[in-house]
Image (cartoon, rainbow, N blue to C red; front, side, top):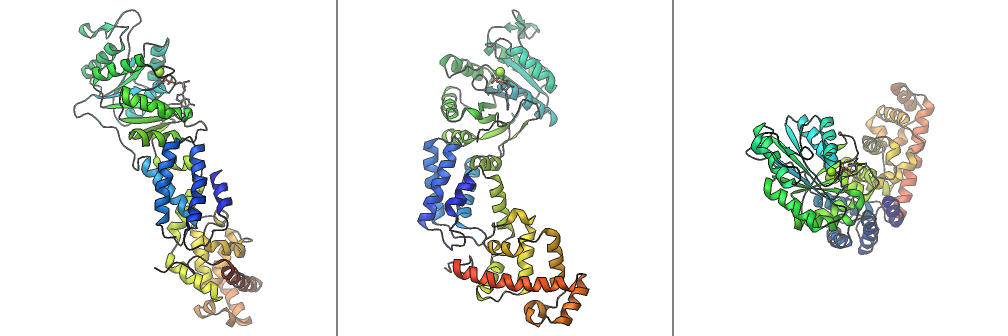
Amino acid sequence: SLSDRLTGALKDLRGKGKLTDADIDRTCREIRLALLDADVSLQVVRSFIARIKERAKGAEVSGALNPAQQIVKIVNEELVGILGGETRRIAFAKTPPTVIMLAGLQGAGKTTLAGKLSAWLTKQGHTPLLVACDLQRPGAVSQLQIVGERAGTPVFAPHPGTSVGGEGELGVSAADPVEVARAGVAEARAKHHDIVIVDTAGRLGIDEELMAQAAGIRDAVQPDEVLFVVDAMIGQDAVTTAEAFASGVGFTGVVLTKLDGDARGGAALSIREMTGAPIMFASSGEKLEEFDTFHPDRMASRILGMGDVLSLIEQAEEHWDATQAEAAAAKITQGELTLEDFLEQMLMIRKMGPIGNLLGMLPGAGQMKDALSQVDDKQLDRVQAIIRGMTPAERDNPKIINASRRLRIANGSGVAVSEVNQLVDRFYEARKMMAAMSGRMGMPGANRRTN
Ligand code: GDP
Ligand code: MG
């Protein structure tokens, strides 16, 4: 995975104070591969990486993150930004009904989406009508009727071989999808549906007839939204398809389907970059409820393939107090860490969740980790209790903790004297080790740039 590769490529960089050009190049090379693996188009990858490099070169190293993490953070922010930042909502018509037209290749998931979208809208108090304009594929109309029934949404459809609409002037020839679309919208207006979802036909590939038909439906119903529905599994082809639909029909938003598959979703990034259209919804299964508004942050971590790492980076930053860290780092290098600092560092690490998740995340924790590795959360509670049971003078200068003080601390914190002894011993060991390690490797914070 990308996170393994990055860890491998950058394991020596922990604790550096500044991103060097070589660090940036090496990290960017890995991220470039990850993006290509995720089906982001080469053209998009190139311009994207160029932007990342520019940002990374100007970046200060944060106290909480090592250089690799720093770049990953920038990449993630850029990805989220490109994917749309905030989710865009449906643009409802001032005068109902709002017309939403679905366009895309055959098999993209339009009809399935029609059901999901109408169920979702119904839950929000809307009263959608589905209109069956796929008259191409046998069974397409009855498929939409089944979908509509499941979603609890009425379906406007031509009756085979007869006229549709059933209400005199609304009746149209069953063969013409443009007329069905027009009649469907009229039906919605007459029956006070506030939203019309027009399901259209697709082909297996892009062709002119398909585009002409979709454009005809578009002109007839003047949709408020045209949603381009695209199967995330088709990878790089998604961009070609999106460009064809963008010029042939035009669309206002994108829906990604089949995100339950193993596609990394780089197509989303390419489509967004190449067409500028926002991704509005994500569909991830055949069931009605497997559908949601699109979340750029989730897609970004999917594309990078490192969701856990990203959330850890976020936590590390959130809980890292730079000033405190610098002071502690300076003390560590001089071998002057006190029990108070030890407790503070420990609490800072603990705020971030179960200790096991965090090992190695914080540059400082890299060293703390060894001191704490045999300790589980419950033991940490005891350590905390013991240190809390000490006077400030004792925490500041553990040397004064003699036998009688040890007994007092043990009684006060409800532990055995041996545990107090153990803690003090462990503290001295850790302090010595941390000072030695920080001397050898350089602690972040201790050697920060001071400009
Ligand atoms: P259309 O030709 O664009 O209308 O596509 P359909 O809605 O008929 O979907 C084509 C096939 O993909 C059907 O078998 C659907 O059940 C399936 N499908 C649609 N959306 C999803 C999805 O998000 N995940 C999965 N796994 N299958 C889907
Ligand atoms: Mg269909």
